[in-house]
Amino acid sequence: MPQYAVLIYSDDSAHALDATDEDLAEPNGHGDELSAAGVMTAAWAFTPRDLARSIRADGVAEGTFVDSAQVVAGVYIIEAEGWDAALAIAGINPAIRGSGGVEVRLVHSGGFVDPSRTN
View 1 (cartoon, rainbow, N blue to C red):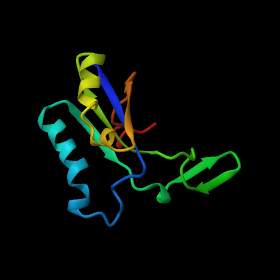
View 2 (cartoon, helix red, strand yellow):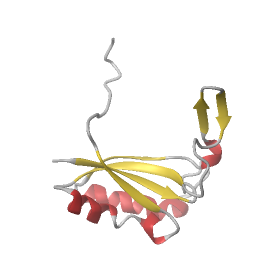
View 3 (cartoon, rainbow, N blue to C red):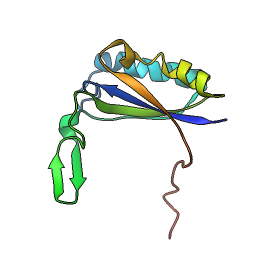
View 4 (cartoon, rainbow, N blue to C red):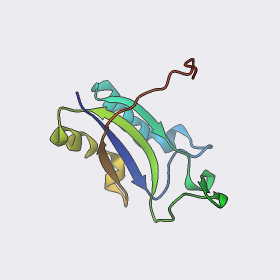
């Protein structure tokens, strides 16, 4: 079944280092729902933008790579029969109700890397 990456854009990530269970109830609840439905295969929540570091040819800078009103707050991978199903699944993300949204991308290839693999 095809896999789709859902990139979550919002004003910032709710997953601050000192975030409480109450702070994370909505985003984590959404993830729990997708997991229980059997459509989410992996998920990562990012910390807020002030903890980001960007690397370019001239060195390392504090902050996100692109300076914009919204940042990528997290990403998760879903399995869906096709675009319509993927968009329906991604369309219930809580970020859409605020000033943010989601971007859905068909996954071409990849997966988890085996850390015991040697080159």
